[in-house]
Length: 224
Image: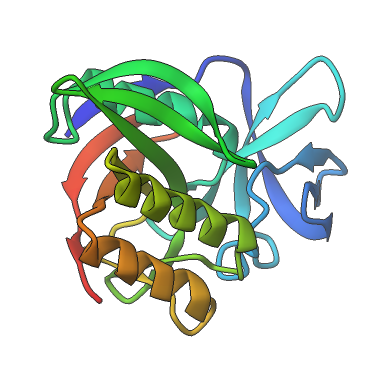
């Protein structure tokens, strides 16, 4: 495994009590913590689940980084996704000759995560985090995602217009395979399969978090 990213700051452990809304977790220790991942996370946020948080000096006094699930430390902080993806690109771990041109690129009414240079051609890359595991299959999404479906449709339009495009799934689970979650979001799954048929790249990258550092752990096999 190759280390690609580290978390800076003061870390603390808490225990899950409830989630009054999708952006806030209340801990048994009485802390209100910000949660950046808007997904359901139902299989992770169970009573007494151990949480790793980053303590802060402003706003909500902590933000959740991960959930301890058995032997896995499952990273759920989407704020870092773009930086993790950038590190993967700079370490040449996506098997393309990418150079970063811009981050947060406007396309129509959307914003896509990266505009890259791939052998002198424009390449648009969108990044998604994946924390749902079904056996050995990582699945996305864990809740219906109109925004995610819109992004995939944007990539399809980009591909049809003559530019290149791809979608990077950051898989924070011990998975062997990656699959779109058709049971949860049929539309997203249909658009993703259409994107694959058109030659849009899908990068299902496996990552491991040890409580401070994130490591590249290979690529999951696509299972459609």
